[in-house]
Length: 388
Image (cartoon, rainbow, N blue to C red; front, side):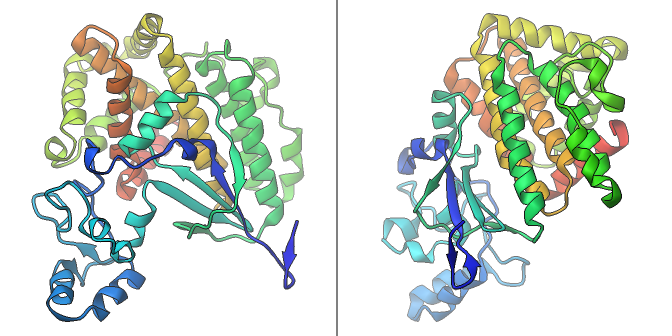
């Protein structure tokens, strides 16, 4: 480890997906300027406050100053600085320093933990989804000299736990990819037994040494008390649990306007799934997902790649609260919900989607699920009530 003035130097690592990202600018079919609540950070607002004349008053007039955090007023769901050329006015005029920090950073997700900074991409951007769909696979972090300001700083000084967490992430990702003939259903059950056992020990300070005794295996006889005895399927979360999430929380107000494609898929879901007998719903989901993947083997690789990427993004977030199990369960949940929405599209159209359409469904799933903290809290509450 390198030191400077007695302190460890911050090292920055980019995910390999970052090298495939290039902003689509005016050609972007989505635009982060539309449908998003754009927060204005204090540093950027101070720049607005110092702007002189009519231009300064014009810029400040579009900021809701009493909101916490401050946000731009939107017009018909669009940022007021989104031009007729389908570009950001600040970007177009060369005044990128006047863009809010989150706009300058997006779709990069920069997380700082200890002396490590990691840069990944959010899959709620059409350009990043295109790169992801074109380069399915494991992905890895590489050290970079590029400088990034962090979006999140995880508050913890437990360096031993950070080292443990990063090593565990590498172990989990290796397990996902070491045998691609091992289905994701098997992977999920094995990881659940492994991480939940670790979690129980981590929550008891007096028993943390026992974490090293937990074995990651798909042998049910060695998985311990949290091994799931039923045959592994793609329905890790019961359909009844997904149903509660989708109809009570994901199908939120104004979804028809904000995400019309997702709204349509949920309407298909209501028609196809609501009439199923409860005792057969899980088997039906697994059977139909297998049928869909038989039609196009790239689905399986996409789900494995997405799960692996979610682990790489989400697992370090446990550094702040030691809740590794939460990160694992959300990674599984997001993949299973993506499977559900892909399946609804397959049943609705009668055919598997091409790569472009699959990318669209992945994008709307990410936008709907991962950029809404209250929704995340609601989904966690359902997990706790119906699963844990």
